[in-house]
Amino acid sequence: MPEPIRAEAVIDLLLTEQILEPEEPITPEADLFALGLDSMALMQLMLQIEVRFGLTISPAELSRDHFATAEALAGFLTKKRTA
Image 1 (cartoon, rainbow, N blue to C red):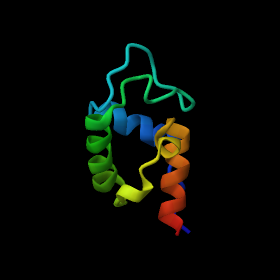
Image 2: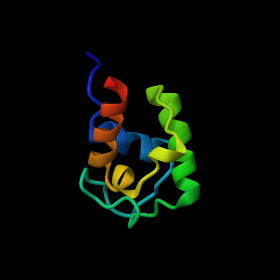
Image 3: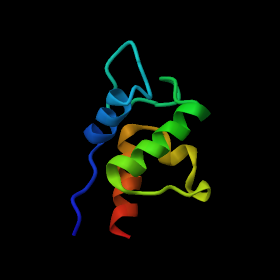
Image 4: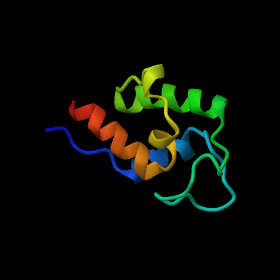
């Protein structure tokens, strides 16, 4: 069974790829949209998810719930990886 993707890995991706540049640290529960995740950042995030985690996200899977927080996104990616 593949290793779960953790919220910390999502936060690392957001910061190292400069998808978000918040003034305060990102917590696993922080609202990513409130921190600046917009449509352009979302497209960049999807590309980086494919590179780092080897997962492709289809347009049908683009929901605010999946991308609301690092924790939610990690859970979504983990489910996708194990499916």
